[in-house]
Image 1 (cartoon, one colour):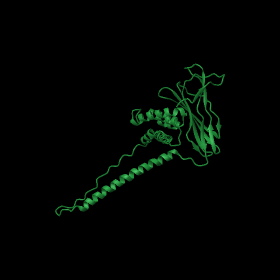
Image 2 (cartoon, one colour):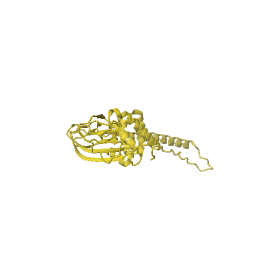
Image 3 (spheres, helix red, strand yellow):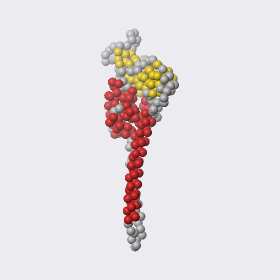
Image 4 (cartoon, rainbow, N blue to C red):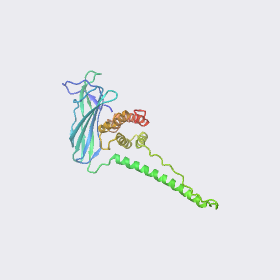
Length: 284
């Protein structure tokens, strides 16, 4: 994540002294139906330890209305404070629901004068057609792969059984000894691949939006939350698994953060997941 833009604030206000590490805003869905509900999360990380961030100013809301507002803050392992404000919005008529940039004014201790820090705006398409859930697409693709593997395995097992049966028919049992019925050799079932590892490998090779959204869905499942949950829900369930928490945050930034910061967030996502899957980050 990164600060979308920084500029001079409006004049005349007692500004707090804050070092803004990262600031962004994203929606949990790209497509919604009219009057459907969706979430927009504003994510701010500061280097100071604080309990509140009342200086954050929300933008304007076009073709959508606020029906819920939840605020959380977390002290990160490096000592920074992460603030999450999760807005529950209801879409209006078909068109585009737009949330303009959120901002806050603060004096950066490094430069000594006030600055205005802003997120990028967020747009969500409101369409009469039901949107396709990317998690469903990813799930059906995974089921298809397992079905193909099972077909190949059953074919190999049937071929083995046919060979054993043909060999038994060609043998003549000895008159002095009772016939021996041979058993087909046991074919061990391969262990199913880890869904998170499969999604990670696909994203590492393709680095496109489809594989990124599928990987984000698997990360939410790994944290223990459903596909429709928010980032704050996933972070709350992730507990003390540091590399998983970092991967969740970077996946959000890579999918919905400022365009200029998405490549860097994708690199950080790969690094965090390599640590998590190898068990070298914080164990599982």
